[in-house]
Length: 178
Image: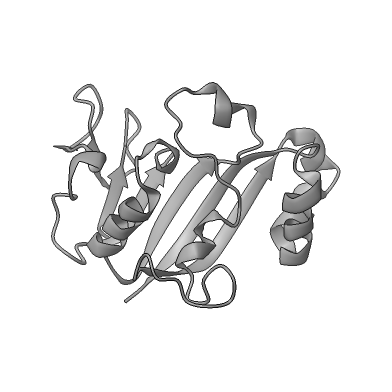
């Protein structure tokens, strides 16, 4: 059975996972404030790390992803679910510190952002899957399919169309490279 860590589990902890949260009124197995230190687990302790609607709340995304990378074994999976920055929910929650798009985690990919290595973090991740959800109307008209099945169309959508055909939620599945 895979060892799964659910970071910011809230009341609905991922089934079979060890849940951590900073709020004692949650389903957390371990209380921990991610922005105030390291995760209380050894290196390579988990096969999967799940963070649902958490990454947009942290003080430092790079440091947080580095911690997720540290506790996940090589070849393990980090699952991040977060609102697209054009979704209403991205800006209506005053606790959101970051507003992200479908290319925001490309920073950690081996080829970096502009086709060359980056220098602020040694963490490397490979995108295994990305699913962008759009509002129901756009889904019915086929835009969600195009955004999810063509990187070229997704780039065009992010640059020119996303303010009209707004994104809703993004689900990243990232493989840990060590």
